[in-house]
Length: 450
Image (cartoon, rainbow, N blue to C red; front, side, top):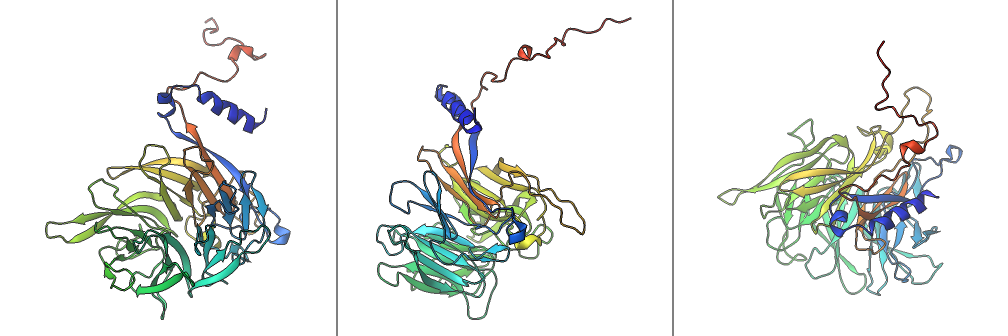
């Protein structure tokens, strides 16, 4: 019996259990590897890449099934047939892939999902790639943003008109650049660029309503921009109410994850901020505090101190309780192995949030073997999974349970959310002890004292 067959038989057995049992335990998330790099050092390919650290999910071919695109390849559901080089961009450049964010979006409103992607090396900005709606036809590239130091793009309804716009991120201030969002319009060229300021132009940003006025604000590592009534023409006011700081220096700032999340973590009616420390140790939440005079401030709390390189995160309902959780994890060899924590174990965690308390659940955890010395003799590890620069929470198989799609340098994975671990536990499924040929009773068979 294959492992896959065993799993499906076990899952089928769960269907016969009372619903109260199935809803009581931990979600069972089973990884399926879609693709990954070949370990071929002679040709500059290793188990740790290059491979795209980002992906998009949508029904790209219109057959009703959710497909996956990752860099220059897309994978056709349900068997994940690989279509290579369907678009430009996302080129390999030494050990990296020039794709630091991507998502699916119907840019030209023709009913077909296109892809928006950015890169920091050769692309130097962001493009949208037009879905031709025909198999075998290359997707046309359209530039939508230029930047000297592009960290990524995220999407959300910034202007409040019901469709999605794009927020750009640059990892540091550069003369002539500013914090930029792209308004999605209903005619060519499909986007209008708005530069709202130069403050907060650092690694990582996000979208969410900070002041409770119903508008989507922009959060950065060093403060937030308040959305005006007219987002396209009004003035965005920057509030330096906080600075995300590293573990070792509370007086300095540090690079944030991309995206940063906005959510009411403690249930007090005010949205807080969740941010990974993307190139160092730590995962934090910033509690929003408003005093009697209306003055707003944020208090930084640590969720994790011993885990590093939480470069990306996503929020969604993982355990089926109707409330959002969030997932994050460690990049593999960020900055090509130069970051602090690069040789720590790889991890993917998801967190339940309740009244300011964060309960960690393990999605995966891998040890990276490392043998110090002048000669690189480190072997490829078994089952090494990493979380790159994008993670998605989406119901891939449309069974009503959200799955987790994890791209990283070591490969592309879907963690299928198949069921909840039953409580009380199932009857034992192993062979009984006495059926083994070597079995001899031992519990009550003590040797006599002499």
